[in-house]
Image (cartoon, rainbow, N blue to C red; front, side):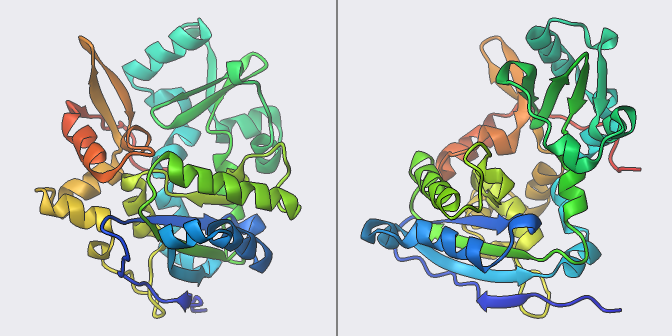
Length: 314
């Protein structure tokens, strides 16, 4: 049976009313997808005259679950996090092992560290139960874009991934929006907080939960390109050219070819100089809330790219 094609409500527009604009994707989680949630998010960006001057809706589409499954969008989008959820400490870099010791005070070789999928079997719990396991801030480490949670005497890597993958299936559609704006960093994050307040008022989001339980948004310029790779299509289901995304064009004009950009998205962990040594992090994290020039400078400052030993999930 053929998969359904995307429904394009607002076709992609490249127009920008300001001198500097960026393309911020917001897509709804399958479990919260629907008109009520879409309306709450739109209220968050149109509730004041100032917001309407600075934020424009540039794209709105409904992407069917079977269409996304056929293209393998979700697994590709979270590829690095999925790998760690399967393999756990087996693919930790030396830097990650040292950071684990620095934070938890135990050598990783002596610690019970496992990926989320093994944790489900060991703990005999479902993906949703693992997703909802709460720990205090002191029991959670984020390194290289991965989340490690101490649960009892064990440490679980990316506990949210199995549920995220399971919830995206043939029957779960996703609404995707692109907001074109000259807001960067904290200015747009304040808009996200405004959306969150409305979602809580509407009873869509529990006040104790994070907005990420309802929607994802592009937190920086490199993530804007990653989101475009997964979620930007026309009504025929064809992918729109990445050249339409402003930051992609920005990089191309400054010497980045398509292959170099693709490699950064595929293997996003880099080493960045820090004092007389280095830190490792995902380029998505390092450019979170940054503008275009700062993101380019951050990328150019990387001293090495980190390649994992494993490239495919079982």
